[in-house]
Image (cartoon, rainbow, N blue to C red; front, top):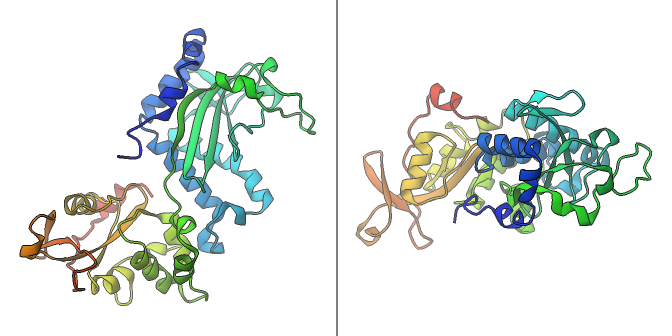
Length: 333
């Protein structure tokens, strides 16, 4: 099953659907966002990128939300608001963060589902309520028209309030518990992660090689690559060249495909995971032989190749098609 084939928000919205009929403004915002991002893939990518920005793995080596300082966690809401603004090119609001379909919309992010802090100036306006959990690899986003009677009495200095539990049913979910692109390093066994995240200032290339050798046929986001490389030009560790990941691992039959049309086609035809925006996938191949007749295959370097099984002996793999500047520029990182 593909990650976005099932939209859990459709089921949870059954009782709140009349809200769209009662509130044409909220309905317009809902319709506009779903037109911009029917499957939620762009929204999910923004949340993945925002968490990776906060972790700042290339400079810190961090891979888990718990490793952030409290001030960084507090800053997450502002970064989500800014990055969504940039991704969807929403108009600026007057009293709120955005103007979507002509409606004033405020954006609120919480690390806890239901924990959004609502400022007094948001009362009367539609709020875009966002939540993401890296440990669960899930996220949600919904819309709610804020009214005073829906809020708890606030005791904090800036008078921000939370939504009463009994009124959260008034949230109309755009997406609910949707899949967040996986933070691979976070979800690896500790032993495997330690084998990848080698200690030392000059171990970036070795860490990237270990990452793609240890984690095969699984989408690896750019955040994980940056954390392993711990340098700004992390892609240099992936390129062809003496001692670099693609060249070293190809000798073991391991190919690394990226988010380019030619690479995605190869991964799909051979039956491997297909990388999406900002993702890479490694997998081991072997030359097709009579015993492999039922396996999907691809033609590379004038030979047929299939996904290798553990019983297939290790052998050097083929060169992947060259990626032109046009191919690279067509991919958003």
